[in-house]
Image 1 (cartoon, rainbow, N blue to C red):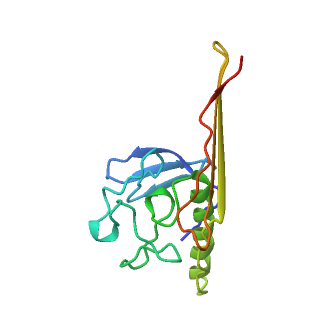
Image 2 (spheres, rainbow, N blue to C red):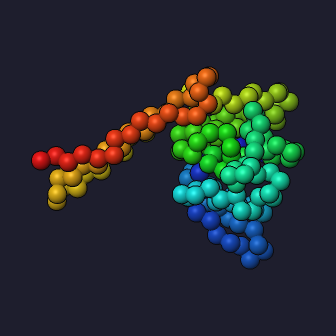
Image 3 (cartoon, rainbow, N blue to C red):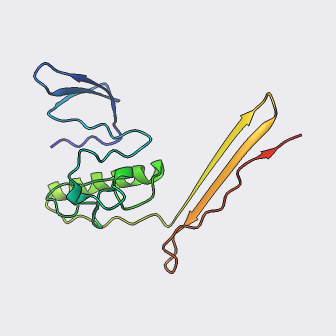
Length: 160
C-alpha cells in the first residue's frame, strides 16, 4: 500500500475495462478498481448497507473511525457520525486516519480520534449595490455536561 499525504484527486476517467484512472494533485496517475467521490454538499451514504447507518443515514464509527460491525473499513468526514458536518473536521479526521493506517501497516496499534472541543465559522457577504452586508457567526462548544452544541448567530445587518 502506498499512502499519499497532502494529495487529492483532481479528475477521473472511466477506462474501457471498468476501472477508473485518477489524476492526482501531484500530477501522478492512479488506476483503481473503485473510486467514490466524497466531495459535495450532502453526504452520500446511499451505497452503504443500512446495517452500518444510524437513523440519520450517517455511518456509525468507533473511537478509531472504524465502521462499527465491519472489518478493516473506516469512514470519515460528513458521512460518519462522529462530528458535525464541517470541512475542518473532515481535514482533521483524514489526517488522523492516515496516521493510523501507517501505524497499522507498521504493526502498531491505532490511536483513538479526539473530537474537536470547539469550532467557529464566520461568513461575510457584501452586496455593494445596496450596501447590504450579511454576517453570520456560528460558534459551537462541546462541553462535558452539555453534549448538544450551543449556537450563537447574527444573521445580517445593513450599513447606511
